[in-house]
Length: 238
Length: 316
Image (tube, rainbow over all chains, first blue to last red; front, side, top):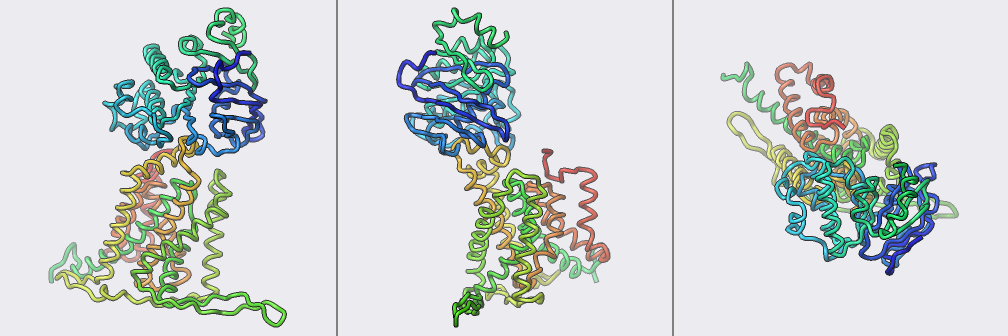
């Protein structure tokens, strides 16, 4: 397996998680280096979303160790984890229907300095500027995804977790999100991506982890992608 | 003698003003219920009891309170009534009673109600219904069922003759205070940053928490605020209806009908419906008094048939 080249920003060791009685994660181990874009790949139900939720403290029961910037967060509630500098863009986007676009955008509190200002955000996502007074859920799927990403960029959190940001979007919007992720990387953000769209992931990721049945079963870097394509097709069933 | 729709103006406007008074209490109480239901997803059957506690709190702040204190004497425990004196006016009560009763509410939420979070509605209903029964039972045991008098505060006694009707000052104050508090609550929830947290947490509490907001604390404070609104209504009610252990139990059934008509959890719906139904009730007393006790429930049945989510409610 490959590890983060530099000191890991996030280090996950033996992470286990449960939904009620169901044991979903069976000891997940991986790390993400500062400034990297790392992608979790895997089939439906492999445990990718649960891994993100577990890191964020959003599952009722979890065990193991999640170190962020050298500090253990496994015993922290999710509001403290967010304040520590981890931000989640959830799978279903989580746009609030009772809030307009501006309120959705300003909802997450700023957790540390260095977040993007509104002007910078509108530079990345010009559509949002024109829709500020619209109800959040009246936006198109692509605009909602942009809003979901934009609102966590304001917070100053240096570590972003994006759960299937391209799901259900048109190719032209997917390209736009790819451009956005590369720009965020240039700005120094560290990104953990969960993706089923392998072609999209290949355009942005530095490293890949493959999940199956609640475990990491393989890992390789972008440079070794070609050499691992056959294996990957088997893992993902594509 | 001039009449309006066959009624002397004094009678019509007299009943309308009574309707507005009742509507003020309906609005304040259903607003508290809506705030609590929205955030905690609990139908707070203890709401009538905390309204009553608000009125009693005003009474204690004015007259002092006798508390049974356990006392160790001659080898065994006994209870000794000790009087804690207090002579705080209505205005102090209007400020302090919501804070005191709200704090009791927050304690109950943390100790009891938080334990049933996420369970079926029936658990919340049973728990708060039980709480209401215990609280009302305790007060009934101590103070009996008859009412304790509470004077109209100085400066608000008397009234004004408006020509077409006599308007008692205190009643005008109650309507004004209720409108101000209802509007302020609506403004905070719909137009401020804090309100956007509340609305978002109503939709998806776990995600709001994952943004760094302490949702459990917000839930406790929201319950405390909803309870404080009821206590505020209780203080306002003390000079009008007397202070009785069952004063809330009598009112709360109508208030629940108001909440259903307005739409569960709808802030604006509870305010508009509260005042509106008070007025409808008043008018019914003028034109068809026999139906005044059931008109709210008839409207509830019709609204449920036509729009089950209530006039201002959104489908879940």
